[in-house]
Image 1 (cartoon, rainbow, N blue to C red):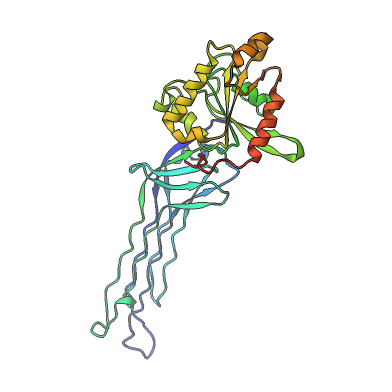
Image 2: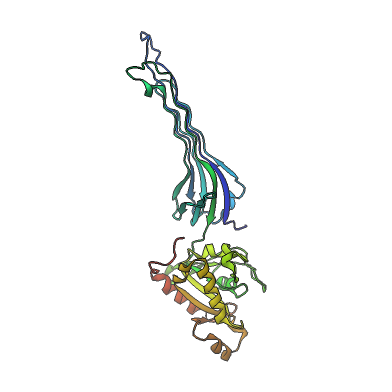
Length: 333
């Protein structure tokens, strides 16, 4: 199933119904007063979180979402029925923007949470509202107001406990497969991971947490190079960052510096998130080389392929996730 994390939709709320011009017609009441009812309100276009969804795939081919228009008012002061709302179901972690203005309409996190993205027009008032001492027989009613319409952009940002950060082909997918039941695509060439993968890590005492294997970062990602923004947008909601570096690289320390620079250029607040650094592929070097390459910046040396050193990493993540993140860490964006 393709992972779709951004779509644009044209939305149109319903127009309000027109007010009615009507007069009472009753036996023995030859000059009945005005009794025109109001028009019904137009339906809203509403986005709602559905926790069963994990992608925007269902919206990929829905280009125009329309709500129902309000019914017209009628005699006997009867108000027209309201138009039916149109519901857009989205996964947790969805942001909705006005595509033309670029402004944020709403952020949807919790199951069942809703936001109105286009308001239906109000119904017009019937002629009963226009009776006065000088106008006993008003033949005036209001038309309904038009509903809001426009182009919206819906963007998904994954909600995960741990985000794996690293260059392509450093073993992020192998690590995810080693610690969870996820089955990411794994191969010995860059950009094997072209879309985010989520895995659930099950620990003792029934504790679980989610790990996101995100598309590999490259220099210039903050400018949209490579998979650029598609990677960086998803990292904003993770609680902990786990940097995975290739121990066989010429300079893992420089690699870490470049990765931190990319994150900072995209959003400096990302550097406030709790993080740990892992040197992977320890099975490819001898023990002296492991010690020499660790330097002072790496917290762990592992081999995701063989499982060497993976358990201490998970134990550390246990502790980090049990501790509330700093107040100013990026949890919303």
